[in-house]
Length: 532
Image (cartoon, rainbow, N blue to C red; front, side, top):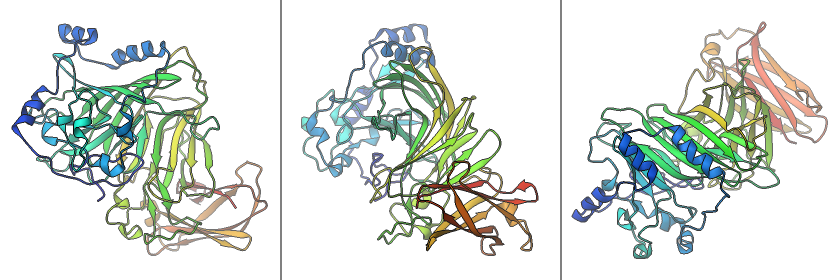
């Protein structure tokens, strides 16, 4: 069964889509275990915090990251016994943290903390600490904290193994139930949900050389520090130490659950070696097929995707929408976006009838939107679309790439907010693309693009709008605009742009279009890459 943000099942790994829930067993022994889960730290850093009553901040974690960057990289992927990494997915998902042992469960606090068991894809462990006015306290792993379900290998698990990740719970739907609202699990992946949503796309702390011939490098979190929230507090703060072969990083996350869940991110990166392509604020999602798909799919579901487009907001005020696709070949698209105002992978289609999947509920998957807190400078957004013949793997990646080189020396800093939400009429504030449909007619391609939004719905049917279609967009590729028309859509209240393009050669052909009235644009810019 597809898990939601409100059930007690463990979060699924980014590579998979389904998990099952289950009720744990409570015993007097576990009550005592809960009290012993958090023990005082013995390190010098924790002792200093206890003596001074100081709170942790990003500078503290950055000192750790900077010191780590001066050391040779140590691969920690062998910390988990090999036999645990060879268990099946069903075996791994049958291991559940006992919710009655959640950190802060009995303290009448707004947030609770639970953990994940290593195994399967998760061959590294992460240290987890809680921070309060008395200092920093490591959370101690014990196999008895987990219900192993039908598995019979619980007694084989090392007593000091450690966790593979964590999740935070908050009463986002009703006051008497703590819903799972964010998960940090695997490499540097994390994902969250808004109040009425289920898990979908994932975010990452950083992406390195994605879709590069040299191969991708996956940074991973080594340690977390979670601040104890006060009664009535609506935000949770946690810090993380990132490590990778060529750089380290210090991160501060500030979580505010709600209808739109907000995650503030501050990062400081220290480089051991130059990095050719750093992906800032990356998203990973899944697109199997949709309205604009041209490849055949034998599937009872009309559409299958976690996200159906990428949305960009430039510093000039332009909004650009590119529908996602499951292509025959790997496709990397680049969008020049200096000092971005925002970008993200969006799930716009919220009509259940367009999916017909009662378990996955793609109509409830969140959109992910990044808003930089500072000027990032020159750079570009890259969109990577990877061919797939099934819907269990993330095959879409998007991130911002700085133009300036990333190399040893001064640290690189990026601050931004990630929004996890269902829909927002202000993103963009004008008319937006509702659907893209494509058909091939001999040597030409016909596009049907529906725009909608309140500014368009307010216009009477007799209003004449112009469709501005651009072919090639300065790339040197050529094509012929065979026909074009704009008409009112009486069903949606928006307007429909229909045009036909005949490519002059077999190379990918960039297309752009928007609707205007007089000299003013009424809609975002629709963008597409036609790959004959």
